[in-house]
Length: 454
Image 1: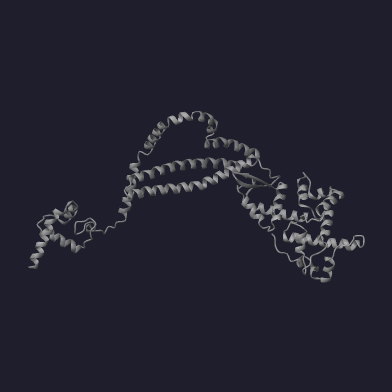
Image 2: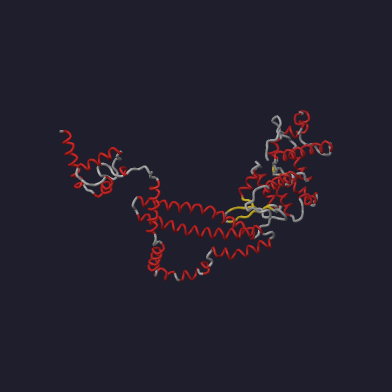
């Protein structure tokens, strides 16, 4: 909204040196030339109002005006007198007085100002400009900018999607106000909206929210706070559930990795953590479902009475989510503290027993994990793999692969050694042989090589 304003754009006479020299001069006594005096005051009053509106600057003081209306290194000498006269006539108003007029019930600023009386206005003018540079504003400009901001807020996305209930976050309101670059004007606009009850500010769960008045006023009641609190909890659950789901998957992968490394105890611990997380996830899903039901009932209600009825109906469900008996039994718990300490050992044994019972089928789950991995490995094997891929020439399970010619040669070697076995049987039984069993074969092969050499 704020922008740099070229005074020549709002004042055609600004480039006329002769005319501006007259207007920059101090005000003479009104009695000497009343027409000239009124003309000069009116010129500066209108120019200040135009600049204030074009630049979206609500609050300003004499020093600001001297800087803005500086020309050829000179500032108008009559600005202080113009502001004093503007306060007397109601053209300019002190910010505190403007807010005071807004607080008066069923009374606009114009009617409030007219009711002050000339003596009261003179007192204000003397007090404000008695040699000081207090801030002032133009009421019409403040009203225009305030209306523009309010309309921008109405276009914002609601924190709770509802045509009747309009809530905004502090970030949203700040974003709209940020278009006003002048900080005092920005804060004053927000204060005006609050004083007019077009906007209500409240804090809940350490967060600041604003309620926009869409009908009468933006008064905040317990229903508003209940709705906001429900929405905050739902957002929190929506953010928490994916995190727990990721943790469950992490523990499941961790159990598989521990199994591959041969650490069954670590795998069991990972499965225990996984089951605890799954139990917690089930509870969170149940809470989310209950809260969503209450939330939808509240926002679908058309009147406050229906909202209150829906809210009361949902209280029982909300109480189930919170153990309110803990508060009621606080004193009783403290009185039995000594007894609890004494039976701590028994409690520990009970917990251990329950844990063993709860996770008694961990061994079966570990076996299932191993079977899943084995099936995945089997699926990657091709149908063209030969038996020689599994047995090397030295009898090792992971020896080099043999070609068909090598396999045939080995079969002949076995036959030449006098072993009446077929190749398939030899390969299947190879794992059962030790080095002593292989010695005759090796000797026979050496004998054949020697005979061939001779």
